[in-house]
Image (cartoon, rainbow, N blue to C red):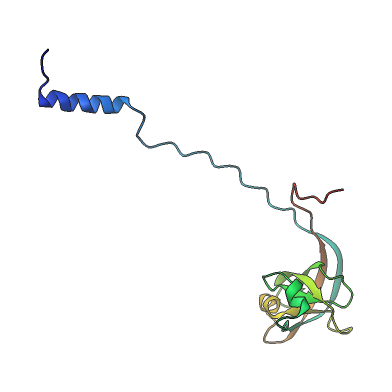
Length: 147
């Protein structure tokens, strides 16, 4: 049996490596389709009036039952847990908040948390004319309540 020269061994090694599994760049895997955005909430009712802001006291029931974002509000009539969109009619900024507390009187129509007031641009002024829209959220597909 004849022996191979070192150069032949090197060539044979490269040839054998090229016959193995493909070590070249792999094609990118197709990414899954992006989830469909949630349907915009349906406006159930509207109310115009003045909004003010208040500091939700630490440890209060309203703070404990509100979302972690701090986007909460108090309203004299709406049930706790209702979601509303509040739009500042002067600058057209809006924010969605959850009702977590009761309002105290006829005016203002809604008291928003300081976090929500900042998004509405009313922290400095303390109040603004607003449009309050009660929202009916459509559950995401697969998250419908059981019947």
